[in-house]
Length: 342
Image 1 (cartoon, rainbow, N blue to C red):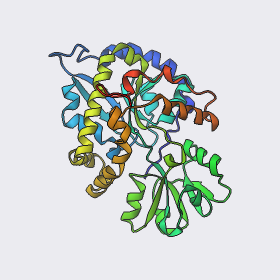
Image 2: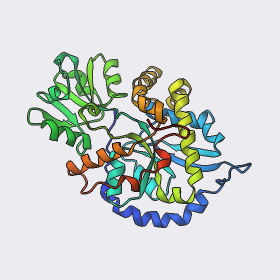
Image 3: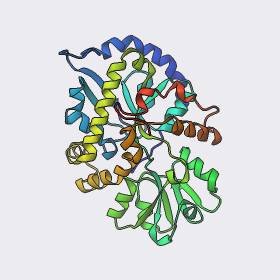
Image 4: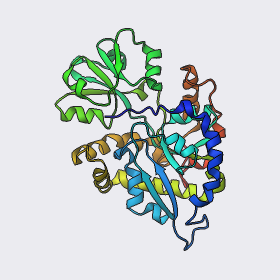
């Protein structure tokens, strides 16, 4: 159903120059509101998604359509994504104020000189997984990689992690094609998946997949991370804070009752039926709301997690040097206002 690597990092060196050019447009983009709030018109901002409307973005649609953004003085345009949509470039060059990226993408971009900062991490546990047929009797990913065929998208950091940890010498690796057709017809076929997507599709077609989270193997980047340019944070800090606060309220509303936002997204993404939307919302809930978020707040992040991810990307040879966490992880976004660290 999906490919998750945005293969655009090679051109990121151009973003620094492009970002400077975009600053002259900052005033026009910020027209329509001020950080002082009050009776002024809502500030218009854009949020770029890295995939089509699905439950992984439910909280953003809930924030828009159930009033959280409006209550925080914002008018938010949500731009649906898809394969090849250059979200990182769009954020870095100021085409949009906010974008959804993977934690590993953000660190790789920073290692290449792009000054993006994370604000809110939807998934505390990465939904990236490997699925195989239950009939194979695999107990973990190592078992899956001991035989048969596995479909993986080239260049995925977690694929590199699994290859280093277990090796791919006993399994045939083929390109991931974005669907589940081969999986359904071949009992020895395994593939990458989002726990909220491909397993549900395979079950609807009569297959019995067993799913293993890559996070359980030790590679667990924050996923569906809201990112912005540091320049926006410097010039409009209160606007950024209001955006994050509204996002948190939207996700609380979606987790409590996903049906309204699912109805909205279903009109934008007609490839999924209501049953699939509901199943995906239920499957992702424990990945979003965890013991940590109950203490620190939805979307909160820790420097330890970012440090671990940076170290892993260096060990995998994907970046030369891990970005210094204190240079991009702002204290304002490590936990929700009013929450206390454990």
